[in-house]
Image 1 (cartoon, one colour):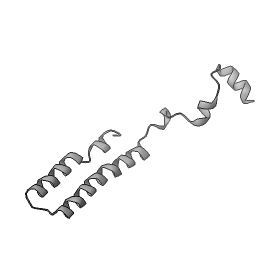
Image 2 (cartoon, rainbow, N blue to C red; image 1 turned 90 degrees about the vertical axis):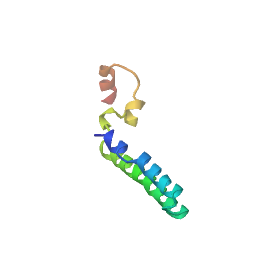
Image 3 (cartoon, helix red, strand yellow; image 1 turned 90 degrees about the horizontal axis):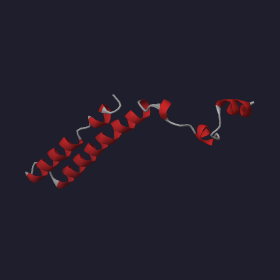
Image 4 (cartoon, rainbow, N blue to C red; image 1 turned 30 degrees about the vertical axis):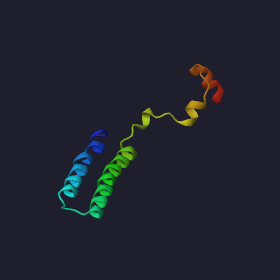
Length: 81
């Protein structure tokens, strides 16, 4: 589900459709600019949502984990006391 949400934006289809409308004088240059801005926004918003809710947090290292020296678990437990 994490990978399908950013990919379901229709970025390619939206930009090609807007370009087709511009090339065939269906939309004006200003309308084309708005359409492209909306298409790009529709790609960014689902990606932000996916990163906020579906990021595998158990795979992300916390800063305090990186600061620990590379010692055995027993030595780390002794240092924590």
